[in-house]
Image 1 (tube, one colour):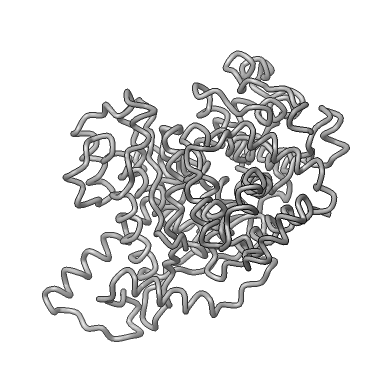
Image 2 (tube, one colour):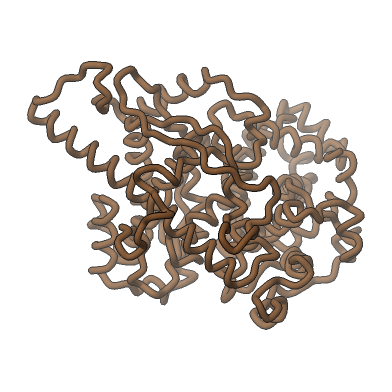
Length: 509
């Protein structure tokens, strides 16, 4: 079998990482050696904060150090602009709430003000489902390369003319330590709660516009005067209302406060943040009800709030949904600067955002692909699933939504994601074809769907138990939900790559 022949490799080491760069800070050979190494075993923890921006498309493989510094400066200003807009919306909401408490404002439509809503978060989510599910969203939009983005050139983010010294910032620059973050629970039904609400008549609309044109390819380095990130592309955005943002804000804060402390077990030294810094950061983002948390978790929750609010404005078609915080948590555990973590999250969500669509088109497509892999690989197992009316593979729903975050340990999750990101980066860099990759090494070609092959592999590893023991889909769901801590991530990746070798042509062509 393929996985038995595959030689075990160590993670990308700091020494090897340093050797990959030329004198001007450009990656040699277009990043091929980097991707080959990461696909073999992930990234050493010490250099993750340097490597991840490349894997997630924040920096181009052909960029020099100076060009990346320029991108970093632009990205900081754009993130700060989003945070200023968040603070403005929070202030407007607070002022309106005070006026409502005094009975000094009427709820008349058409005045451009926020509509007061006394509904609960669950009511907000319910109404948002009805609203967004009625929208005409085409399959092409589902697989578009980049999410909708808010304008970064309007009156609140004039980055060309802004004086960087006077820009407001919510980046937690005071602590020099890398902040680690626990995963956030999603609801027991594992259904991401969408929170975009109906834009009722009279609600103020947040004015957004598409960013300036950028080249179609993924090279952010064009000229010394015009440097852009590969994450920016012109697409028409959906216009969110102030009420949308208020709804996202409420749920983000609840999820941030509920975040568990798993990260502290892995990085105890990074939990040693001063209480003053933690509380000041929480106050800056308007976080409340954190008195029961220790300082490290307060800072973690505040960073989650800041970045998720900014992302909700950046990709307002998706906004915020429960489960997204699970994906952001590991990123801010590694990336200490909020603006860098934000753009890494944007790169991650370029693919993962399909998991949070109200119509669940993306989820359904992925479940269908998992089912197809199992069917082609093990017809006997698939027939048993059909007998149990489980051929839709709904029992792996949670694995798909939060990308194995619940089934793997913290470090295992990072390893799996890094290998997955390397595959996606290889395709993005134009070396995703079988023939192109075989020139590097005879092995499984990169695929955009390595996660789904890994999910199918985890089910196939339990084929005997499923066939001989389980007689209902509920039993299989319980088995899948009990995998936490029981999986060998390296064997899982070996088996996933074996499936890619065997089925790539059938599945993806």
